Image 1 (tube, rainbow, N blue to C red):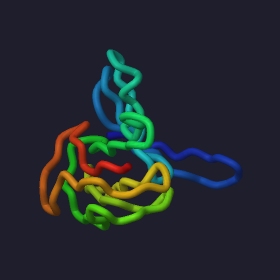
Image 2: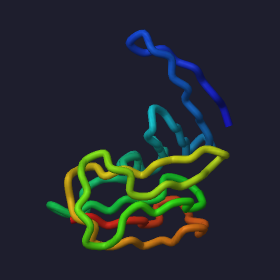
Image 3: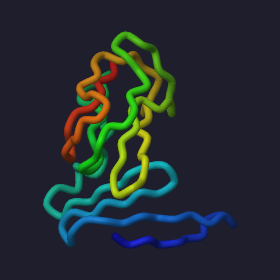
Length: 122
């Protein structure tokens, strides 16, 4: 893992980078970014699966440490839905839009693999 310090708009941030040459993960400003050489479209794990529906996936191998929502619950853009821990960092999985939780597909303490569906929103 590499740790990089950057300055943006007069503020300093830390970027954590991990992975291999063809599968790079970066954690910056509360968000996880992923770039795969073979599939650049997979970098956005929070893309709409179809109009009005979002599937939020595990950004990297991680342990689910907290589930903050339940099916049927209304959430607002930016609300924390699930918190996972990877590489000794807690990573919040946040709502990409105002929505309703359709399903929670994980449980606290569970080890999840990259791209595993954690929460579905509609």
